[in-house]
Length: 421
Ligand code: F0G
Image 1 (tube, rainbow, N blue to C red):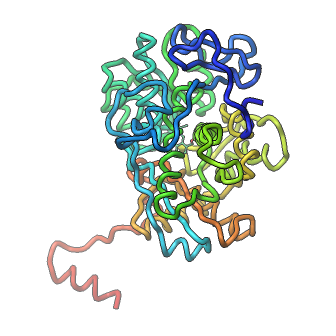
Image 2: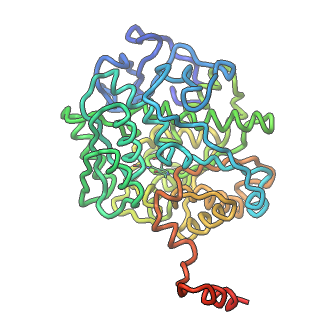
Image 3: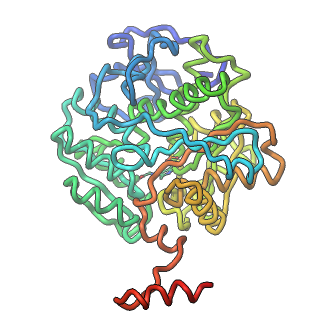
């Protein structure tokens, strides 16, 4: 099975281009990477993964940001706005409060457009140029559209985004708009938007840059590589567990691929691979359902709802890659309520870290699993926070305190302050 942790390095097929090819995770069919546009397998419609004849070791990485990891990517450089190299914050109070040996926050909100999507786009837009496509498109709960718009404009390309009407946070629409994307607000949810974009892509109307596109996940592998390098530098050991929010399960798939490739390269022992732990909102938790039921497939949820609009997703398209990732690493999946998400957003804010609701789900999930005794007190954990607080200013203001009106004179200000005493 190609997605097993112990899979051998595959033989290089004749259609590889400079040691790079695409392989179907279901039937093993291989394809030349840049001759034609395809997102899934021609034979069986399975998901595709990028394969390499040579896998790098840690010593091969040099420089900063996503392109530090060029040897693990299909190109040496991309359409870049200096993405990656995000902080791995210490959070001593939260670490004590949750009760784990080590807790670090990998804050992907510190990327150029404020989310991890930039890591995928710097690679994805580079591939689009290689393929010579015209218009770039995605469906989005917001962050992908912001990143696509920014990287598309950086690359001088036309961009089209389909968003679920009324369900995308203000900061994200503002970004897509200012960076010049054509925005269609669809009167349905994200999953329908993605169905539509897939149909547009299959009719040749646009090049799809959702995480169904295997090249995007290559860029997102670098989150995992940065976390591992950060832990190795600080603790001489990789984390026991990585907790992350799950929507389409692209990141879960990408981190798992990063770890598999390190295992294949002999850089990481199978037993040391961090446990991938996915967190969804109670109102949009099809992956959690599949993990809890031991199911091989995820059931599509048609009605989804959560305050964490970024992960308001009922049909996680990368599930066939992510389910083995969670299972093979001995991880798990858990869902959290909107109240738990907001509480975690406040917890992080109390350590000076501003995140959007979906991002806080990772910390909320960790707390829940620790309380349930599923996460042990001696674990070293990294939580991924995927997007910046300013992405969703309305959620931030609702979670924070209210401004107090005061008269425009100094005595009035003093009086208001003394009222507290
Ligand atoms: N966190 C944030 C802030 C996101 O924007 C997303 C996905 C996720 C987590 C989930 O990541 O799909 O890799 O499991 N946002 C997509 C978008 C769907 O359109 O911006 P995943």
